[in-house]
Image (tube, rainbow, N blue to C red; front, side, top):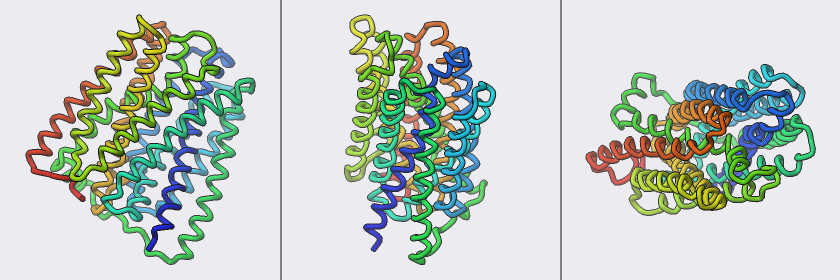
Length: 406
């Protein structure tokens, strides 16, 4: 009945999350310019990145719980207004303290989008179609990477760093208009209100303990530390490997997004299989992530290009794991109306790891010790793998053939 509408909603959510990444990774694209312009160290910029991740993580806890209990459409509109205004204000300031404060606010507003979009889409797509949601939303990240690094990094090369935030603010204003039109159409269709979660905190904790979802929370910490450290520091890592002006490197523009695309599509194909076991898929992708991280450590002595290729593969595996951990698994609990809540908890965990890695790797880069980074990725993936293996054993013990709600 709503086949055309559900496609439109998916496209709208994908485009919205492209905007979200544009309003987030613009900081990564501009980080070297900001550092040079304000004469601050990469450690200080790493602290700003950590503050964003901490704000995002805490916001996930709060907004995930709220997101299952309010209108997802209006909640997304509020978030779009917030991230757009923050980016506009970033284009007006020239003080590291103001930048840090505004980026904390941006982290909070951005924490609304992922869980709320997934919750909205769960009403239009059945359990057998959940892989379409996790894949579509994850692909929006790839587009966000390309726009942030290629469009902003390349086209705004000769512009001031403030322009890296003004352009995304304009894009946010455009997306706000699209959501306004969607809200009008949704109200005009007189559809039933989306059901809200009635699960209290005690029942939620009982569900998480019964399903051993706390293991997934811990795994998200380690996967998040890899995924977000690549997003934040890849331009600087490439600069150390290749030398020269990283903004002019086609490798940065093409290789990482291609790796991400490959990882997401691989996860999507595996999730399509009948009676798929998402934890087995996670296990295999984490093993590959460890191997590729070790490949970076060995190949950098042979060829910088090979090391970059392995970096893209690590990023792809991290994105593939991310789509399963932060979308497919939470969506399997859509019948309990706790999709946004679970995503909030899992994303909170992921960004705890991201906050830690942003600061630690910033220190390594300040000291010129970028070669420690792939070892950090390998250890993080190994710890995540151990947690997934424990959850996989529980999965088999229960005799589950699919996720709980499927």
